[in-house]
Length: 116
Image (cartoon, rainbow, N blue to C red; front, side, top):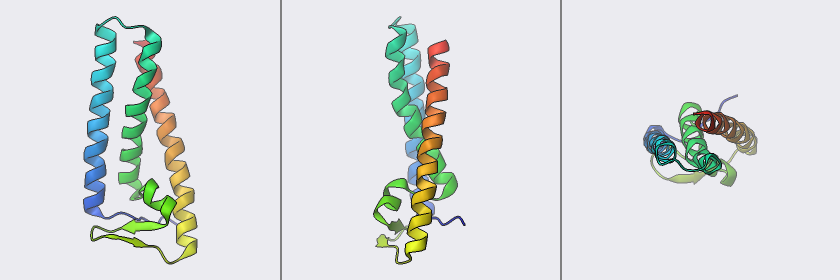
């Protein structure tokens, strides 16, 4: 089952955050390349790229990892406690997968940055 814990407005906020983080990752990548910095310093782009991918995945799955950890939902009115323990368990399980995917995508983006 796929339960969501964020509404449309909350997904919009995460989409904007993801775009901003992705742009930061790209700008940082090009800055590090063009300024001739040491390749190992490029590992820093992992942080904004992973964050961006986590935001994009949260939008796609309608799940906020942070709210899931607390057993909460925000369907655009206010945060409220989720009453069904089965839903909380499912959201937390899905959140772990989202984090793992974001780390994987962030790693791929970082490796591509290192190869340039």
